[in-house]
Image (tube, rainbow, N blue to C red; front, side, top):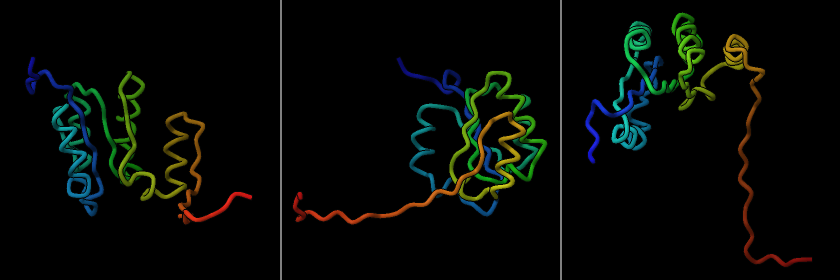
Length: 132
């Protein structure tokens, strides 16, 4: 049985950082998601608020940290989550949101989370090593 566009779940991408080309960088992921869901993309606070108000959504994906500068949108997202909605903070959210702003968002959401620095390290693998 094929799935029509009206049968697909509606997913909202919220990308408020206009300097970050989400669609280009995550093109493969967006393509896969489009096969499974009807995507709506809000690139400014007004369109995000409108979609959250009028569109039944299966999930909202926040793709960047600019949400920290748009309180009205964040409050509407919290209402959506508290009403049973699914919110995913992804993309450059964790790397482009200032630690204090992230902590404020988590606190306002009622989450006991705090920002922690994450470091990546590459450890070389030595194939010719011996066990002692």
